Image (cartoon, rainbow, N blue to C red; front, side):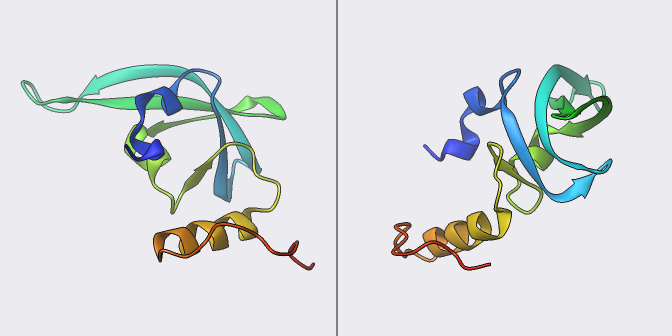
Length: 105
């Protein structure tokens, strides 16, 4: 199973890094979950409230599908997102995820 599709990854207090700054922050945790029905009789969608790690007042609601999209977020709090994006791209292309040297600044 793809780790991104694992519902355990969307548990409360799980940590996420936004690819682009949101509300001035990039590191968030899930603090609330809710299901919202779009149309009567339709499936409910999972929405998650994210809170910035360094600002309890910086909160945003997003859909679970937006959070799981690697274009928007990465699981965990990543310091060097550029390296994480390169590793993910290499993994998707079938390359090795092993690093032979640390990235240069």
